[in-house]
Image (cartoon, rainbow, N blue to C red; front, side):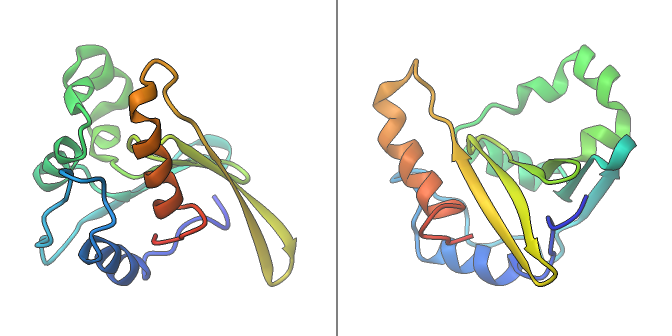
Length: 153
């Protein structure tokens, strides 16, 4: 994994975007977060990796608060495939060399495109659920304010 993670920005940019209350109406996350947010990085073969906040009770509550269903983690086939370490992963998957998935539920992926020794360009792609056209506006607002042009994260 390269040109992907930095663990210093979250405490500032994520907290400030939450305090600015940009989230979809009725779907706010609690401002209070644990003093310590455990992280995990799981390295795979060929440079693939998953890294970010560890999935725990707090992250489970955040997942539910954003309208997502974490029940898939309880399926026997999921537990078998991921194992105890994989089940702790709650961050963003990275496919080597430059493909990053904004997870959970953001419907966005990005390509990190090196443009020189000191420059990386990021191309974002956002997907909306065609079976739920009533949610397109909220999905697009989230996409623009999370990792899109408004860049609050």
